[in-house]
Length: 490
Ligand SMILES: [Fe+2]
Image (cartoon, rainbow, N blue to C red):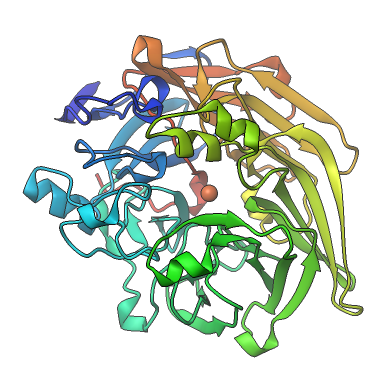
């Protein structure tokens, strides 16, 4: 059954911006497509919801548009009893609703001229619309979406994708929340942080399983920083002060120019989960930048952190020479040459050791999320297509214990999404389950939900559900196992 909820022309003219064309062209329709046609058989022991967030501009941008600017849109599938249903909805943020009422874009994007702004906005950059387009996690019975430049966390019904409001941070005296908060599925707690160009440059907090703020503390940093994620172990949280941040001199002039500072170390702050900022211990490592971590855990006196470490945190001269025109900077910065890396922080000696686990370039890592914060060996990443824009052309599974790697490439012209692990109902073993991903076929204006056996991704999908909608490229995703969900209300 197909039900078109809304149709919007979205972007009428991409103005030659590659991040508004082809696989990146915004999805125009909000639809419900129930009981999808499936090629292959949906595993009966796969039960839950896959949600993926991403930028999807509703109106024509004011000027130069960046991939990170678009209004957040969730694409979701519900899988139960051998059937798969699909829905997609824009996240009804304050910014979205304001622009909807105006019938046009009001806020400029991150690489546009801030003086275009018709209204003061919010977020760490102060002129940006909080698009809530970056991440999605499941906490306290609901989906929670967030924005990488910090903002309000939006609460969404995971079944219907209806925006229910925001987590009321103001009432709890919390400034904002960044993307890449982490949920410990064993305790139900959510660990989060924010950052800003004004003091405090970072704060850290914990919401308990019922959404109550049980810890909130300032983190002392030497200046304004631009961290993208945190990591958790059973008893600690790892915060980051990495040497890629706004040029401090330009920041005084209210200009936000990101720069890599190779003369500074990467610093990792280890704080007890319920501790305060004075208890943080900083560990120094080689300078780099990390968008995404894989997992962290405790091992005797040490904390182990696995993550995707960038080889070149800022564009090389070759990258910069390759592009011209208004989108040159956007294109040059979007090179994610990250590889699997491990850091070990010794709480007794204060030393940090690090080593590369693999040379292969991959990103957007996912693990069995039941094991967030405790030892894992398997992770599921995406590989990048040979293209000028960021496109996922396949899946990579790592076994960090043996170094073994498995890979699957999508068909040419097919592009994946972040691909979470979905445990098989009743499973115990770490990789006993499935890997799920949207796979877009932009040339045919359609997509698929592909399901892989996590223990044999190289065999290709065990089933493919056909989705009658274009799914624009996106950012982060999560899997919500059926046993964590309340029954649907509709
Ligand atoms: Fe991210």
